Image 1 (tube, helix red, strand yellow):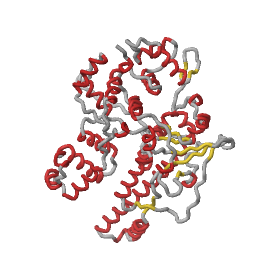
Image 2 (cartoon, helix red, strand yellow; image 1 turned 60 degrees about the horizontal axis):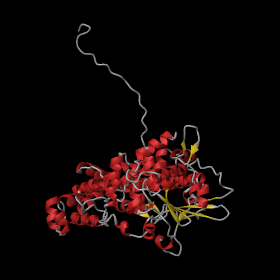
Image 3 (cartoon, rainbow, N blue to C red; image 1 turned 135 degrees about the horizontal axis):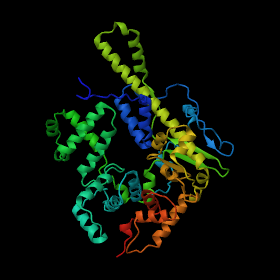
Image 4 (tube, one colour; image 1 turned 90 degrees about the horizontal axis):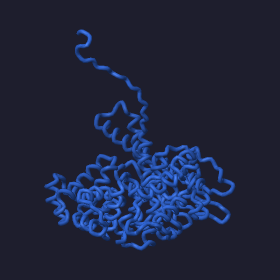
Length: 492
């Protein structure tokens, strides 16, 4: 073909380096994101689904747990080697006298349920207007955590009382963001939607095919046959879903374990709310500057691979070449269950090591605050700072931080509380978060209450003062100080 005629396809070879996570790393990453309460549920589910996983010690001889303490003599202890601790080197909190955790823990202070919801806004990329709408929707939740008013009515209220023009489409988008918050089901408009949100959340995280099928059946029953569910008509549900009555009964039992009132905490006192949060770490300090750190394993039992299944696997392996087809299938089933049990146990251990080392690093970086619980002693700290001290990835530290709490001498803190970044102005001066918060408070106190300044206006003022800070950070600091949003501060 002459040059210039036809088409030439140019192929370009690009070399890429891809990092593939091992099954253990994937399982550990999933477990790291779970709180101690969620881990308890995960262990129960895994034990139910894997017959080769059972409660009990792996070894007959067990050594006493050593207690980690960080005082004057141990404050420079190296934490870079994540695998330098054995299972028994990680101190585990266990209530004394056989009492439950709730009976023995001191009641501490924590942020209100409303403030917890508002703080979750900063985990999503929303505009100023969307933030205002979400905050208003949070304020309209009833004692079940539902929004039982039509969005059109809420739209009218916003326009009449706050001069905010938001149509139902905008409110629907804001509501979708709110419905992604914790606890799952918050912001639903009725019980059916509440249960659907919870099941969709479970389906997003399910990693077991049989459990996925059960959840899909539960979702189908709620979505398509809610009336039959309310009347407990098992036979008609079974016929409509093409499932056996036994499977339907199991599905209904699973549905009964969902939370029909995710906003119940709205009606509880502060003390009651504090008691419903189970911390993942227990820290106690002494007058001589010693800091004792323990992991709280809650009701998570010791786990081991079933001796019966392990022995059965060995027997199959010894006669692998002489097995029939049915024996081969039984061998494969046993192998998968035993390997799955080993994987889960190893992931639990790795989770303990990672949580413990991460908390140790936070203790080192926030030592003065932990000893005094004086906010002025809280130093700027990033995920990267903890990652460098532990030798972990930033993503790993982020997973540890997510949804975790620590109890320090009876006071409850979210791990998020410790992660603060210092700001530097144009002159190179380092300003800590409390200085910035104080300036934001001054700006709000000096505003015209009939025309309160928006978060973006505060950003503009701070930028003019040579301090670069994002609108989301301003909104976060404002919420932490209990300062209402622009629409809520407006006085006509």
